[in-house]
Image 1 (cartoon, rainbow, N blue to C red):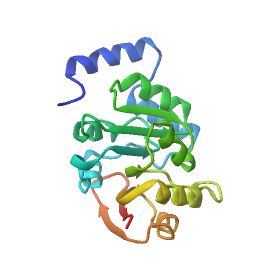
Image 2: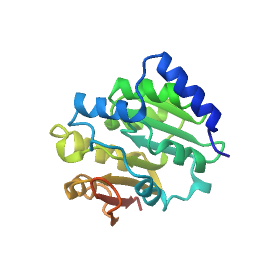
Image 3: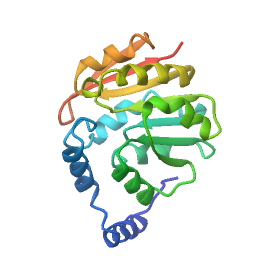
Length: 207
């Protein structure tokens, strides 16, 4: 069942405006200008990219879905529309503006927006009552992260994934593979040209 209706979206928009929270694009642009190193692109992912990135998820057997750098929630609606009713969706971001926005915009008992680092994903998942995640999605710009952070995230992600789970990564530079392959070597790759800019897609499967 869809998480929101047109009437609910209008109501949230009115509440957002009353609270002084920008529109999704305005929020995304603000985040990029404020923290360009942590935001991978100037505009959100296209729906075509979202659908392709998530197309390999086995939703029926998904209990815990984690996202790094959810931004304004470009992927959130599609994930929630597919996620089982008893599943948990944890979105982790270091930007308090994005977390405040997501907590305001997405009201769903399965969804939790957490202010924190992806490198702490094991503890964050444990704090939500779970040991492992089925999928971890990331749009973090690995190549521009501070030294050591990308490797820490790669290791933590490999540790938190269950056997058979996957690290789903969309990037605009192929260098991100350097932060994934040492920890999860089985990787499928594709390109999505219907996006600005064209994106690299990686599905790293934990065996």
